Image (cartoon, rainbow, N blue to C red; front, side, top):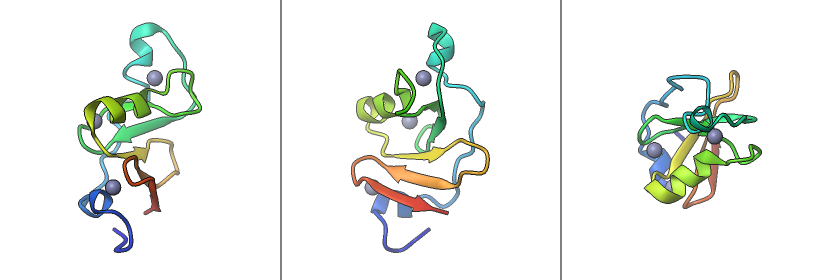
Length: 89
Ligand SMILES: [Zn+2]
Ligand SMILES: [Zn+2]
Ligand SMILES: [Zn+2]
């Protein structure tokens, strides 16, 4: 990973891929989502901030898990919530 980013992103040696291409919380409540993100701490895939329920951000805030990766095909980037750090890989 890039040397000029935060310690959370530097600690990631391999990016966790999504286990499923759906939001784990939206499917429980029958909601829809726009894009998907995968938590790099626990591996759960949740919906982005353009989605009505913003589950990935809610998960990061409630769990303290700092880094998400885009789960969209073809998108290769990481984002760290506490540091607001965005890195392509
Ligand atoms: Zn960080
Ligand atoms: Zn969701
Ligand atoms: Zn997590």
